[in-house]
Length: 319
Image 1: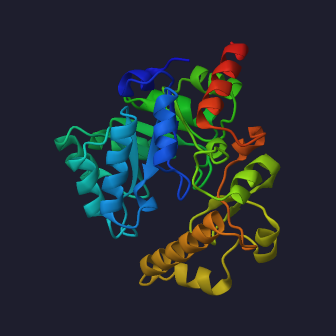
Image 2: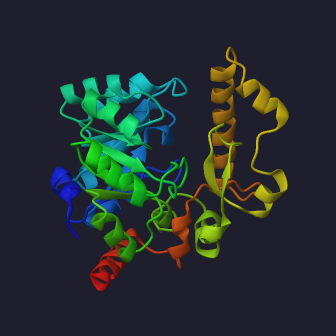
Image 3: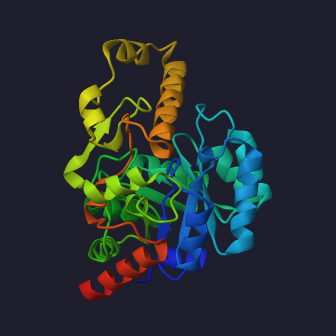
């Protein structure tokens, strides 16, 4: 299982364990590195920049190897500049940018020798970030968990490979080794995989969240705008069925107001993150669990080492 991402980050297998809000943590990153892959952690998972700094140092001390940090680069992230400063001071291997222009991030990161991979959902945006100096693009397809794109990997990866000269890392919908093979054969230079690692022993969320990824499948994944104001994939629990997946009339009205839109989206995001945090870390019937359709392939809660081992064996069997 070889691709350009192995060369870029000096890893055995071309897989990034994707940055997942609340789920990704130091233990997952350390286990990923030991298993021959890499992992990225959202900066948003830490309440302060000093907590972020300490997490980075812990991974570097305990596991070495390549570590990434996911950085939200739009105005909803009030800690953006401080987080970027810490990331660069600690010389993280790569940043994954989301939800905004990565121009400043790329400029500052490159001054410190830090690579920048940018989330994209189409060719137009991919060409923009390539022009800005991105080191690779994360091709977020329609089967990604969280904020998904609009195209399948079969459509998106070849389009980006044709239009861009930088590596293309496919993100979304992959849960077994045979699917890894399909994505690499489509031209991807690596993969970003998240949802199947929620049900890992290292993930810091509660057992109910992990077990949900075992018990539910691809048909149970729905889109909601209630969490961040932007369509996001979640598991259709009884609570989600009760509250629905669309914003109410007032939320929609405020979101369409040009003067208020920015602040409404920020408040919606903050409220949604608070609800996700409650569901992820405490026993509650108000379960809002983010996941993607690749949970279809999750059959039990396992250590990350075993999940990677399964993927490699399935890949070899599919060749």
